[in-house]
Image (cartoon, rainbow, N blue to C red; front, side, top):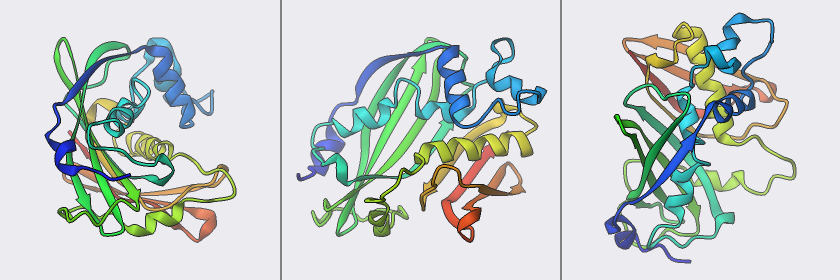
Length: 249
């Protein structure tokens, strides 16, 4: 199913409403392992209604992940979902995400890159409420078999080896779950548990995680940013997230 890059990029952005509340936030936090052990008072900020703060990676699931859903149904985008892999994810926070809210979500396709045997589609999600912009999210989707249309190769580090991530005979953890787990570790360890200090968070999905595996997360603090390494400990520290950076205030 061909991609019409010019049509996708020139299409008018599409907007829709999205809402979330404390239950959505709590469910997301529980899904990435927050709130354990229940005796740890520091974990209450992720699960207790009266203390609830929102981990910025919640933006990837707010409104049931409208960035990907909206982007893959954009004009000029007609792909086989079985050939789609999540390449990388970036979130830029304009201000802290409120515990509950109603906002306008605007989706667009700012770029489509030709990687030869595959294409990379950049899906942009811009979310704003009555008080102004909340976050901007860029999702890079790797689509096998859709390259070779003569388009720009682009500056991305998308690797055709992502194709090998398909066809596993046992369940794998969703990449955005690993993404959220890593951010929580950085916030808790390097930012004193203060989610409002996060300004942006980006990572490239370089490998899979199987449920039950141990993630080894290393951090190196620099001025205004934390470089992060995420590997699967039981598989000789096989990389699962690459180019992972948290920028903070």
